[in-house]
Image 1 (tube, rainbow, N blue to C red):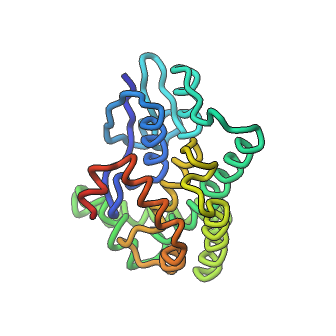
Image 2 (spheres, rainbow, N blue to C red; image 1 turned 60 degrees about the vertical axis):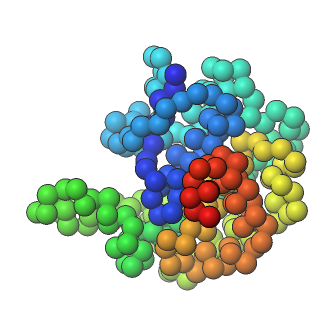
Length: 238
């Protein structure tokens, strides 16, 4: 049995982390039984979540988790795709995980009202004398990560403008298809769904969300994927 160590429901989403959502959806796509536990990044082999434990295997990073479950269980989440389609899926994942994700992080952590409403509450259970210090330190660390990645060097308006291009590109690539590669879901859909759901959650004030809400195919895609892979959550949210 696989144990998936992830985050927790938050921000109007089944998981606070889009990478945990990605991995959970891929496990559901593969129809592999698993149990979900709340994990601490400090305990993961890559010092982040998600990570999985299966027998003597302990795997961190959502991409390597996918590789493990496909190899270990004889599954190909991209079955039926051509080499060109697989390459396109990889390129889409890189755009979403290495670019759009960081814009989501910027909106959650660097916009004061969003931080106060969301990530600041990660530290609520700490003793009062340690709580504010932990919040400030975590926010400084996220700001440093954003600066190192590159998006953190831009103004808020510039971050939004760049992120809009990635969201618009995803919408154009999806077009009128049910899924990114055609009539059936593939691995990249888990990533795309997780990231666009993070953008579209109404929990946070976001100019990027307002832009994405005007792309009807992405709205339908988010709702379709939520209904298929988180049906209980979708019914509660309806």
